[in-house]
Amino acid sequence: MTTDDPFAPMRRAAEHAAAFERGLDARSPWPAHSPDAAVRAFDGPLPEHGADAAEVIDDLAARAQGGLSGTRGPRFFGWVIGGSHPAGVAAEWLASTWGQNAGASVAAPAACAAEQVAARWLLELLGLPTEASVGFVTGASVANLACLLAARDAVLRAAGWDVADDGLAGAPPVRVAIGDDAHTTVFAALRFAGFGMRRLLRVATDGAGRMDAGALQDALAAGTGPAIVVAQAGQINTGAFDPFEAIVPVARRHGAWLHVDGAFGLWARACPARAALAAGVDGADSWATDGHKWLQTPYDCGFAIVRDVDAHRRAMNKTASYLPRISDAVREPTDFVPELSRRARGFAVWATIRALGRDGMAALVERHCRLAQRLATRVAAEPGVTLANDVVLNQAILRFGADRPGADADALTAATIDAVREGGVCLLGGARWRGAWVMRVSVSGWRTDEAAIDASADAIVAAWRAVRSRA
Ligand SMILES: *Cc1c(COP(=O)(O)O)cnc(C)c1O
Image (cartoon, rainbow, N blue to C red; front, side, top):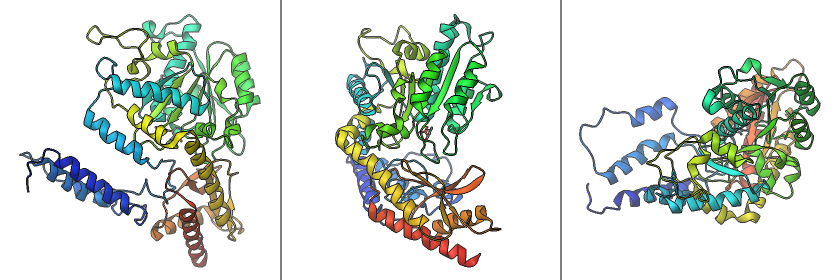
């Protein structure tokens, strides 16, 4: 069937989207298809001839169906993945429709304006220095990279070395101190930035994964020269925060640039009841955080935030005569990100913050923290279940069968995770924490409510009872 309606593909997409959204509460958060089955659903020879766009959209929706997971649904606790707020999703549609390239303000003033205003709102929500610059990137991975490149160049510049002109070969060595329980993407960003893993100063952490400020002081005092400290707001398993009020003065004393990976944890700052967890974090020099986690913007979206605007700009610098700059007073989005051309993410960020408001964001963070605690408490009330962290934020980790001497709690925990999956009620996974396999629960979708938490807690307890009865 072909159609003369030029908007038919968009109408079809809107219908498929509405059907998906309506079905989210009822569907299992687990995708029906394995990765192999998903490939089979899409596979086919290179099309020799074109096809009607609306039919392509119907075909795409049909093929994708089985391979879609319920990331946006109420019972998805697998990783810290936000639920994509409808205001942001709809704004994303418009961003695509408008086709704006957020690379330059001359070509896309509305896209750049939305970014500029959303950036100001973000800094205010997170309680960060209002003079900081914000780069709109794909996520915290690239945000960490952009911030660490700014850090690298700035600390070397202060030591009399210009990375832009002279590169890294022959540069004074930069000492990079990082907590042992930092996120894998921070280590990747450091590798991309030219810092070897063997040369990092690994700082000891406590049982929750918090950096030991005394150990940091010792590590920095043992040497001299340019230094970067990488701290964390929100450990990926425990949700714990590094003690910024102790770390900031140590970094200052040693002239180090302090970078904070706060992919989701930084959002505790948007909630008055939880903000104390990240007290002092505003004393850092740069921060990486995500839009697509707690803020609930659609994928992909993250923010590279740097206190020293010039350092940020120098590190990301790209200029050419064919790319006009209006004036130094006009914010150019490309000055703060690795990319030139890119998606106009500011529309969705602006729309999401506008829809939630400061009070809505505070309430969302508080609700997620309470719901994580509620699920953890309910499940850990069952004999044989141990809660392996202090639930300060939206993260809970659980062990199964660790109470029985001689039992293989790692295997029992893995079997319980498998049994939950088979039940299909909620989605969560496992991780290794302090040498033991744990079940990870991350509460981060706006649709999650008490009913979803209670149904999921019941499903986890039922899975554990079934595993225990077989053991
Ligand atoms: C998710 C996460 C990252 C990486 O962010 P992406 O959005 O996946 O790029 C980095 N650090 C922490 C603590 C995270 O939770």
